[in-house]
Image 1 (cartoon, one colour):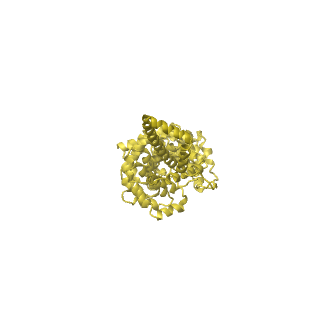
Image 2 (image 1 turned 90 degrees about the horizontal axis):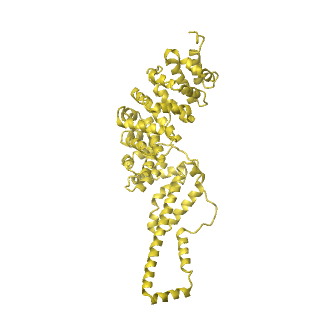
Length: 474
């Protein structure tokens, strides 16, 4: 490994800048059902004309002769009207909530939503159109859904138009609302507006007075849906703006994110919270050096929350936790000792052996960083022998050799760097023999004539140095 902070150069895990779904398309059908309210009125009229006139007259005479029946009839009719009004109101509220959920699900990044987003979004839009055709109070109730529909106008060009028209400031003000649904929808819209790749919007948003306070205040609330949307704002701010990252790590946001990560089991919340933390750890040294201080309760909670995610069955959580852990492991010697002594080390070695490739690579970065401290002046990193021996004896070496064999150059280089540590630092000069026993020589020789000059020179240099003419003579 070239230095003790190899993982620190990793790019921020993508906050999903691009969408792969098509824009909403017209069904091509010129006729639609009439609005819900119109259809409902038609039904009410039809139901009132089903009885014959003779039956109505007979019923009226009965009520005239029996006043107590007339009173009961009036009461029952009033009750029917009240129940009908409640049903209509409930239907409209449920239609609004369904439409908002559909709009949100189709932009959530899930494969299930992508499979049927076109028809669902079209129907959702019609639901909202029907409600908008009602009374002014009903139309006003649609305001929280409008940012969701605006987001489906699609594309960077329209997003740029909204930004040019000053959409950030009023949305930022709405995120300060005491009404949870308003703040939640505003945060959702903001995360979609600033998602990049241009950092201009993120820098502009963090510069608006009160935004950081709104993020902090909403993360403090018990509402997990609100916290989820606000966490996505943190993800994009920290991924796109160094200024935002610097301000966020110096606020109470990191502690709030760590608390959420430790306490919640809600996957929809955990993913943006963990990704935001990972961005903060990778983006500003202050986060590791001054927030995650060894011996601090916040640091212990952060480590516990990351270990929790390493144990998860969810692939995204395991990958993001490994990535965040690798950047903490690139910190001070005390940070390395803290992680090494924790449950994280055996978990990471298990992931290196058994997990999907992208998770194995992140786990390997963490394990590699645990074994070295920078030497400075361009010298090879100093090896922490205790950590190296424990990790090799724990069965990690085959996992690193498999990385050397991979087609991914970055991963292969990481594998070669770890093999260099083993051959240089394992006690009693046993490192080369351990590498040979796991077919490491064959793995390195595949780079003998490789087109990548750096990899070719690195692999050939290691083979010549540790497996030259004198190898095995002692």
